[in-house]
Image (cartoon, rainbow, N blue to C red; front, side, top):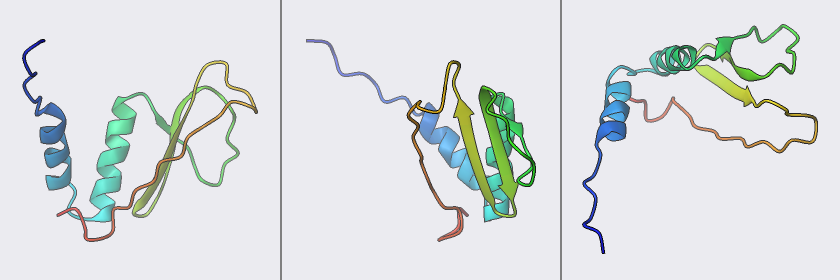
Length: 93
């Protein structure tokens, strides 16, 4: 039997930093968009036609953000997942 592993606080510390930098929904969305950009996602306009090109994309509107990723080889029958969260209550600050 192996010894229990030590808890890695990296993700927890990252979440705490994100929350500290996100006192309002607008801050949370801006910080999320910045993280998406660093991960290779690109912003698209809500009013533009979106192509089905692979990769990550996101749309901003006020204090809201939606992001998605299209994998290589995806077609109309490729399953997908939806995950949701809110940033407005009880606020992140």
